[in-house]
Structure formats: C-alpha cells, structure tokens
Length: 497
Image 1 (cartoon, rainbow, N blue to C red):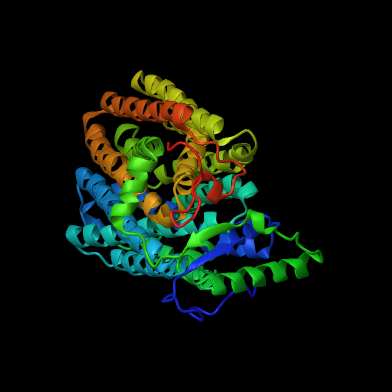
Image 2 (tube, one colour):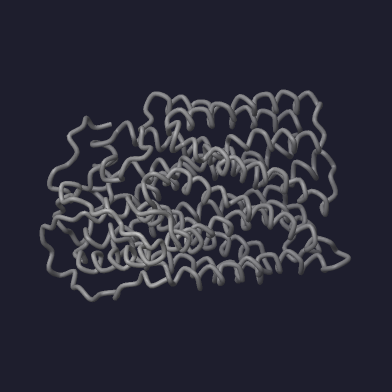
C-alpha cells in the first residue's frame, strides 16, 4: 500500500485560509485495502486491552497465593485493577491533548511503545508496589491509545460504514479477552509452569502481540483531516490523491468527482487551547456533554467491576478451581464480540439513537434479572456465565457505541481530547470505584455482590434513557456535518446541543 506522504514536506509555519473537499472525498471512497490497513493497524489494539484486563482478572486468585512471587490480598487485586484504570484515565487525558496538538500518527506510535515497555516490566515485578507502578503505566499507554486510535479511525473510514466499523473494532476487545482466558488456563496450570512463572509469561506474550501490531501500524498514514487544519493541506492533498489512485487501480474504475460545493473553508491553526476545548464541550454542546458522560459512566462501571473481579466471584463464592475459572470468560467474551459485530450494521441503518438506547436499557433489564437469580442462589457457575453471555451481547454493543458517539459529536480540533475526557472521567467514576467496590463486596458474600449488580444495571438503564432524549442522529453523516470544525469559516447553522 503506497498511501504514504512525506512527513513534513510542507511547513506548518505558514497558516492560511483554504477550501478543501478532502472530507467529502474520503467519505465517498469504496471499501479498499487501505481501509483494511487502518482496521488492522489501528483497530487491533483493543485486543491488547482485552488481553490485559482478562489476564489480571483470571490470575487474580493466583496472585493472592504466597508462592506466586507477589502474595497480594483479595483487596489488593481489586486495587491493582483500579490503578490500571487510573493509569488509563491519566494517559487518555495527557496523550489525548497531545494527539490533537501533534497529530494522530505520532501519538498512536508513542502510546503503543509505552504499553510495550510497561507490560514487559510488569512481568518482572517482584513486589506489590512494582506491580502497581507498572500496571499504572501499562494503563496509561492503553488510555492514550483510545484517544489517538478512535479519532484516527473515524477520520479515515467512510461515513456510511463508520458505525459498523467502530463497533466491530471496539468489539475486538473481546477477542483479546477470549485469547487471554484460554492462555491463562495453561499458564496457571502448575503441572506445566511454576506458580511464580506462568502469570509472568502471560504479560510477556501481550508484549509480543503489541510488537507485531506496531510493525503494521508504521504503515498507517496521518489523518488528512488533521493535516489540512494544521497547515499541511498540500501533504493532505497528496496523501488523499495517492489513496484515490491506488483504489482506482484496484477497482479499475474511476472515482466520482467531488464538486467544490461539497467542500469546507478552513482557517488553519497550529493548535487548540485546552480552554477552548472545555468551552466547546460545556457551552456549545452541553447536551452532548451530558450524553457522553452518561454513556461512559454506565458502561465503565459495569465492565470494570465485573471483568476485573469475575474470577474472584467464581473461585471465592462459587468454589470453582483456579485453573478452571478462566474458561468461563471464553463464552462471555464470545457474547461480547458477537454483539457489536451482529448489531453494528443496525447502528448505520436503523440509527444511533434507537440502537444505543436498546443496547443500554436492554442489558440493564437483563442484568436485574441475573442479580435476582444470583441473590436467590439459583445460579451456579455454568448458569451465571450463560446469563452474562446474554447480558453482554447487548451491553457490548452499547459500550462500543459510547466511543463511537463521543468521537462523532464534537469538532475535529477537539475530537481526541473529547474521547480522552469522557473516557477518563467516565472510567474514573465507574471504572475505578467498580473494581474496588466489588473486591470488597466479594469478601462480604453473594448478597453483597448482587447489590453491586443492581447498581450496574441502574447505571446502564439511566444512560440508555439519556441517549433516548439527548442522542444525536449521526448515521451516514460526514463528521463535519455532525459538528462543524472550529476552524470552519461557516459553522453549521444548528442549535447547540
């Protein structure tokens, strides 16, 4: 694939006002090898996050054993999970701001590099504090990835496929979950690996996968949308022209010409200040701000609470052996992956508002039923896992759509920072408190855990109702039509929301 351009053949020092049809040209492209490069090079990082979360969840009980080399308490396992999420929140905010300022590509290379280094160091932890520190920086790398990757993907994928592609990519997280679950079954088998070695190998294998992704990612270009706003319009034109030429050679058909009236006028800028980013979200789009926060808090609490501690529920409350518990994550991961994959097309055809509401409210209602049966002692490990498969089939589509939503509904100049902000705040509220709360609820017994399930269900249902009333009908629309760039000469004439 030759969709590369010189990194700085055009100086960004001479900013000017331009008119460009690049967004319309990108949106009218047929699916091609270029788009597969974007999906594989950028989207596969969610597999790493799924792997990381699952490994810690699956090995949680092993890390509490004295001969593991760490000897954590049950509460410390939940604390380690919370520290990982805190790192992800911090990384999202720091790297999200840098992504909008310095470009998508520089940051999606840097953040993956940080993940690789930190996860390797995690494998060599010999004390709890070392494990906590390295988990923080592993999370920081993954959090930065969310901002850089989601913004780049949405800016490179045609509008008519954006919903399906985003949901499928975010759903690939669960491929990592399934892989991590199967992997830990063997790595926790003390007949194969000593108790203090198997869990270390798991983190090392995550680094190997990350290295492979890094090699592919080097070929993914910078976002042309970011380039033309930041003074590199000539480079952006060259890049898009190369992409179009390659697609025409692949399809043996000429692409339709995009008329000038489909273009937008841009006052180029070097960067967007943090104050302007905040004002844009809070004052120009207050309803969208509320929407993004609600969606992220609901899904973050549910997922981080359950998956960081599910192995403990099985082993401590349902008395499942340590080397068997990880297998339960495989069918749950399959349900989570199939939800976004099978429902994704409906987010582009039926529409965002209806499908997001259905995903959130539906999963919340199903979770209430699961909590009632669990509290009554009607569910053993098999049936609890079966219930989670159904709940997360819908919840996974909803969680994936949260990232899609905040990536679409805010202006280009603030896109990465918007993703970072909502991920960080929502995850800090739901993702840090969830694991700590559930770690303590598990120590208190099944009735306490059921209360935690009710809380998660309530947050999901509430978020779904917010989507019903405040959702944005973004299906099939160009990003610039959903939220006009701050640099645009003629902002969209629509009420702020």
